[in-house]
Length: 608
Image 1 (tube, rainbow, N blue to C red):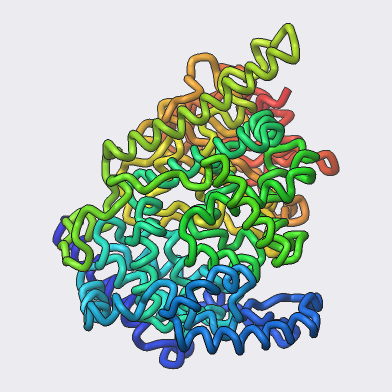
Image 2 (cartoon, rainbow, N blue to C red; image 1 turned 180 degrees about the vertical axis):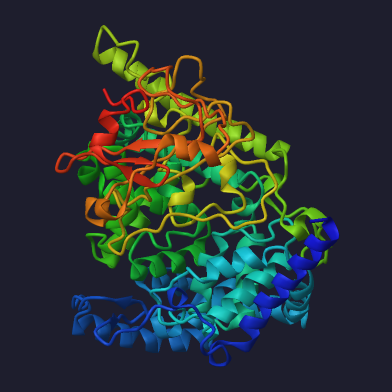
């Protein structure tokens, strides 16, 4: 297909997506796929913030607390009427730390962000950006995909093409034109989604603009190419752990746990979907008042409060699951206690001069004027990926590799100090585990598996990325309803990396042969979680290799199994999934092979 045809196809797709949001839910009857639109059963319970739960909600809000909030509302209403006075400024800090009444959060947030001022200075700008997005936005497909999975357990976003889903789509598309440097990055859907719970469409757009552009928040650096602010904050977070919690840092290093594996949503979306929503709102209240100091202090507070529990977990997956999943469901402390500890943490870090990572450098701030239309090039319009890493991406990738190698060296030094002899086959040189040596961020613990998905483009953080043109969406494994992956770890169970060459493509469960560098880009790693209850061997018939080869031209994949070199190099990938309860099924070309067939073809299946 030539370039002109690809451009026409992209334009038609963009127009088709916009039309569905413009028509809305009521005019799309019978055109919404069932998988896009989960049903709302009557037994579901909705909390005061609009989130839907399968079980009856625990009664944590005592009547005394409700009465206190009612009294606070009266004080806040009076304070909102005299917002710019000295008396209000004097009380503001204390009252925000006590908690903004939920019914007044919309007004207070708009005041803290000064939304009305920027909106009055730019009349008609939002509508203009939305109009340009309909004509030119290259991020429409990804935005549409993310809107369909953002906050689907919330009543505002539960129904496909609901009013708030349409608003979320419009805000993100308009902003992708307003800030041409960022365009759209998937973490932004979480920010805009929370803002739209309390604001109308245009107010949410300007609030998002302020969060990214104002130096007080400076989230622009989190979402631009290379993610420079994320790198800077991770380094600062490591300094805090080393200073105040060396034993916990030692524990993380022992299991090869880099901060990026558990803290991505802390920094990218200010703790959305990482702590209970009521606590998340309290943190947002303080963040809008005091800025990015709150993020580093809250990250420290979470680990400080749960240090004892984390120290008892002796596995990387268990630690990440605890921080990412368990604490989101039940933080274990009342919100007031956490906020009290947060304030203490901010004071503690300030005394140590670690409360603030420093002002954002120029690289983290917008360079192009905001709100000025820049026509995208043809590759962007088509949706074609860059064939090479940019210099910024190379630098970001190198930084992550250095972090990984430093962690590996720390672990090696730790092990050497504990034992006089270290086995040369222990895997310490390349990392904690052989199966994770390719990339600390490219395995099944990859960034793409954190439900923030891959952002734009988080694949730069892994050691392999496809440089081939790709006009399709990235897809990710789904997390089960209980918040854990299919392996029970809380992390999605499959991660596949592609690279330009397939000279050496190594299954994830297989150790690297000596001829393949552990840092090689030419790696395909597959992690499969087997569910024996879902298998149906009686319906599957074995396939003969000779018949298979009649229709498939052999392609060298360089598959290694336990050092064996006598395996045929063709395009069949055989996966052995161990099971203590059932006989291990062997899958070849999508079919389960019987034991009799294996016994008669031992030269094909090296299962010694």
